[in-house]
Amino acid sequence: MTITKLPSTHEGQRPEYPSGDLCRPAELIPGVDVSGMVDADNGLVDRAIFTDHRLYQQEQARVFAASWLFLGHADQLAKPGDFFTTFMGEDPVIVAKDKSGRIRAYLNSCRHRGARVLRADYGATRAFTCTYHGWSYDLEGTLTSVPNEDGYPQGEWDRAQWGLLEVAQLDTVLGLIFATWNPEAPPLLDQLGDMKWYMEAFLDRDSEGTTVVGGITKWVLKGNWKLAAEQFGTDWYHVNMSHASALMVLSPTGKGPKAEIADTRGRQYSDERGNGTGFPTHPKSRFDAQPVHEYYDYAALRKRLGDARAEGPMTTAHATVFPNFSYLPVNGSIRVWHPKGPDAMEVWAWTVLDRSMPEEVRNAQRLYNLRTFGPSGIFEQDDGENWSEIQAISHGWRTNTLPLNYQMGIGSERHDSDYPGSTSGLYSDSAGRRFYRRWAELMNTPAWHERGE
Ligand code: FES
Ligand SMILES: [Fe+2]
Image (tube, rainbow, N blue to C red):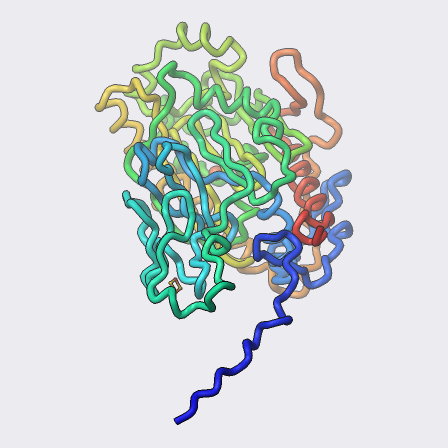
C-alpha cells in the first residue's frame, strides 16, 4: 500500500492576525448609532437598549470589553495556585495567584477547542488542565503539556503561541480586584476618580482592611443588567414605595417609612465616567444590624474618615461603579450584575466585613445581609420584582417605543465643599443620566479591537 502525503492545506492560507497573538480583531455587525436612544441632556432613554439583541452584542464588544470590570475580593486568593472563576461580560475568566503570588486573570476557554479549562467555582491547583483533551497550562497561562504533541506539524507547531489569553490590565483597590481587556483603558484609579473617596467610607473603616465571608450567593433574575446597575447608582427615590413593608419591619420606632425615611436630606454623587452613589445625611435613615451598630466606635471613625463620611456614605448608601459593580455599605453587600442576554442577569453577591470584626459581629452582618439583600431578602425581592416586571412588558411594540423618564433633578448638580466631585439632591436621576451618557459614548465609539491596528 502506498501512502501519499497530502500537501498541507493551511500553507499559504494562514490568516493575518494583526495583533500578532493569534487573535483577530472582533468585527462588529456594523455598529448601531445609539445617539437617538439616549438623550442624557433631557433625561430620556429608549427601552430598546434593554431588549435589542444587536445592541446587546455591541454592548459586549464596546462596553464590557472596554471597561474595568469587577472580578472578586483579594481575600478569595490566599496563596499561589488558589483560583476562582467568574465572568467579564459573558466571557468566562479564571482569576488566580501565579507562582510569584501575583494575581492574574485569563480567559477560561481552552485554546484547543474552546472548552472551559476550569469548571470549578474556586479551588487550588498546580496547573490548569483542560478536561476535554488534556492540554495543560501553568499558573502563568503558558501551555506546558499537550498529549500526543508529536502529531502536530513538526517545525511549524509553536506551543508558546497557544497559551491562555490574559487580560490586558488588572489592578486592586480597597481589597477589590478589577480587570479589563482594554490595553488602552486609563488606570483603574482614574476610572474611579472621586468615587474612591465614597468607596473608602465603606471599605476603609478598618486599618486591617476588609474580608469576605459566607461565599458568593448567585441567582438569576429576569431583567436587563442595566436596570439593576442604574438603580443602585441613582435611585433612592424608590425606597419609600417599593420597600415600604420591609422598612416597617426594620423600623427602629415601628412607625415605618414616613417617620424614618421619607426625609429627603442627602446627596447623590455622579461623574462623567458613569459612577454614582447616593446617601441620606440624617441619622434617622439608618438601618444597621444592631450588633454591627454597637460594634462601631463612631468617634474613631469620624476621625479616620472625616465628618462628611461618617453617616450616609458609610452606612445607608447605594452605589454603582460603572458598568456593573454595585454595593450597599449598611449590610456589607457587594455585588456584580452579570449580563446573560438582554433579558436576564445573574447576580453574584458577597458579604464584606472589616477584618477586625469579632466573630459574632461578622455573623450578625452576614445574616443581616442575607435577610435584607440575599436572593429572598426582604428588600432584594422588591427590587428584582420591579426589574423583571419592566423587562417582561418592554418587548411590546408600543412599550418599546415609549421613552423612559430620567428627568428628576436636571440641572441640580453642584460642587459642595463637603463632598468631592459633583453632587445633586438625594432624590435625583443625575447618576442615571450620567450612567447612560457614558454607556452611549462607549456604544458609539469603535473599541481598540475594531481598529485592527
Ligand atoms: S478543548 Fe481543551 S484540550 Fe481540547
Ligand atoms: Fe431597592
